[in-house]
Image: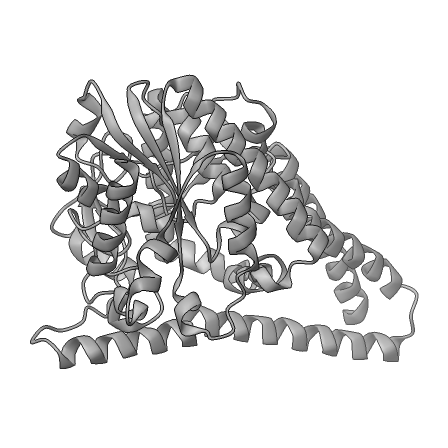
Length: 440
């Protein structure tokens, strides 16, 4: 009787997983992230078939199967617990190495807190404190936010011993609010975390240094986690008509991988497939703030962590990264050529969009830590990207050639010469090169 009940329970769970997947994918998300949920469709259908098959196998085999299933479930939650309550070994070692060097060379203590720990600490003193957010799709209102929470003290990241904190502007970007009031913008930046300002305070991020060097208005539309498609979408949503120069910041380590993932998002693809597509985000900031604050509250709550544990969130994220976050060397030639082809289309669209706006587009190539720490670094993508940009007659600013290759030790431009973003010195050198080469 117990075995029969377990068989029915397995079938019920399998059917529930299928209908929950359908509900999330097709009803809540309107099919916008169907590619993401395809794997769950496959798993749930296989489980349904398996559950039905259980009714027709003998008792002894059924006992063995349930023992195996119980072991798998137990092991999954054990691994989930490990992922939930432990830091990534690489990240932990990196933090410890940074802290050791920092504390050896200064009288200060390296801030070892996690982001949500400093958030909870600072929230006691300032209710207007938030955490830096990446872009999000909000299906209930068919909204894809491409900025952070506006007019808030925003906690970013820590690679230099302290957490970078900035006051966000009216649209949730890392700018003084008054920059938007200018009659003319000299420089407008789009990019990922390097552009956003990780992990330094203003005025040490690249756009802020340009603001000081030029003594003119500079807008920073960079956001952590952005890839080329999101950057193009950001341009279409936020570019003021009085912008002279658009600085497109390309980071060599993960921008093509970012595009590979972005193209799986049906909603984002609207920007790619329809040149007239726009969400009018500048008029929806209050809505964006509301949605992002809900997400932030959930991320910080213990209740959310409990449900994440039940749904094996960390384990699923780990598997997702393994399946989809490909290293640049793992792409097949066919995949790589397709990504580069799409990249060329996006950059060309950005060029046309800039021209239509009366702006001049500059393409800045940012090298990563691996280029200078790995003697066997593969430059294939570097050559291909440079070739594409030059073929489109877009001004190419090569930070590798203009700055880092001229250095005796390029790694000095990274925090404690370890893996990460640029340090204050590195950002300043990059900024000076951009200013010099964009002023010709």
